[in-house]
Image 1: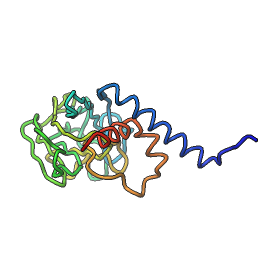
Image 2 (image 1 turned 30 degrees about the horizontal axis):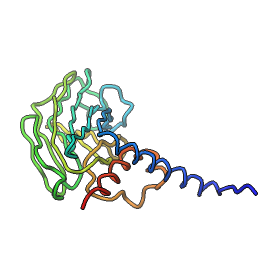
Image 3 (image 1 turned 120 degrees about the vertical axis):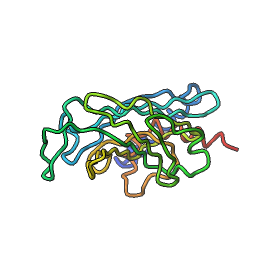
Image 4 (image 1 turned 180 degrees about the horizontal axis):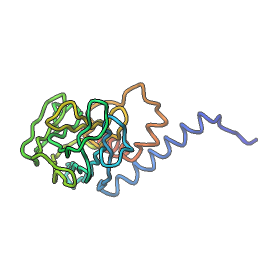
Length: 212
């Protein structure tokens, strides 16, 4: 007799198998990954030069220390928006960049942050960099720190000296990798989360399994 799993159970089984497979692969190699995330302005992510892009990388060394690096790119043509969210003729700059995670957890931040004009550890609020007013068409250069913790996804934000002038992952932008210092919110759909973050979850499970 052939047994058929219910669709929901089949999805869970496939997700668990994917994570298990990635865990096995993670044992054989160190993490070295990079990508780009878009931080939305008040009009969303599809606004041409108004939305910022953040290039990032996470590199693990043989001692299981992870180096997190970010580069904030201010697209050419970015201009200030008026109170109605419409572009003006004044060029936009970026002055700060912030990551949201609990940086007070032991091992969450081993060294740094470095880069920009200065940086600070805000404890449970995360990390913040002050930038030398990155103009349109330029970038912040490398903003980095090291951590004992493998990555998960979380919010980032940026601003200039003309509040509120925000760019953010939430609610319309994209998240960036940060150290895994908290569980995934219960409000997220587990299967959707597994599909999007399985590679990062696999590395997290690997690290937790090797801790004494």
